[in-house]
Image (cartoon, rainbow, N blue to C red; front, top):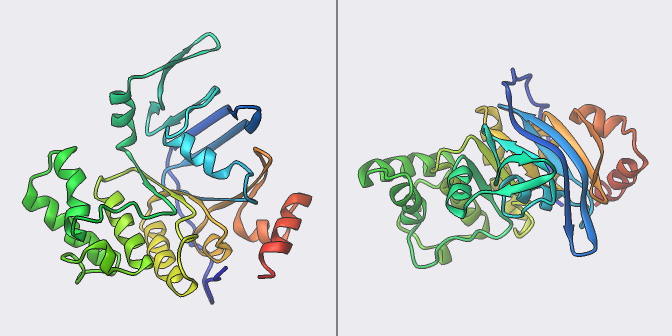
Length: 271
């Protein structure tokens, strides 16, 4: 695990109204109870880091926010929408159509462990295809916006390259630019550096830190504790489908309350 060296704590940010509201959600995969009555509120401009051992439920929680996974009960409101469902009728969740769910998800950008770039398209086309097809952005504007985003992620000279010609870190930065091209209100990151070689991790984390400082609302699943120290407003630890601790980074790392947190930190920070 690569740590960010000599970083400053995040500056105090004035946070806005709640933009993601998770209420008492339950999620099962067969007999496996993955999320157990989880509740969490995230405000505009806030950066929240979710950590925990493998299988703790953190990635499933993130996928439920983006409605890549359905929930069994509870509710998730994001960007003003009850994600994936109409208002509850009694205890029954009433699902929306796939088209309506896709429309809701446009307001959130998702970056995965794998880069999921289209291998047959150039970097520029990877970034412009969704704004042009889904948002109906004219080609000239979409390409200008894409070039500005490539500048932001430090790849202004790669627009004509194909994914196979890029390093893993460069591909992940293109994936971030592609997500930003849809003008999301919230960015979701699911272990975005876990598939990268150690020397490529910092170039992706630097982009994410810059986004946090520009006021982007972010929910980040990661084991990169240097990033949590540098960018997070809150750090949460999940264990067996439950949030067992949440605190500002200084409190989380220097004065953990939960035995699970102390054990997690003792294992991850020794590497």
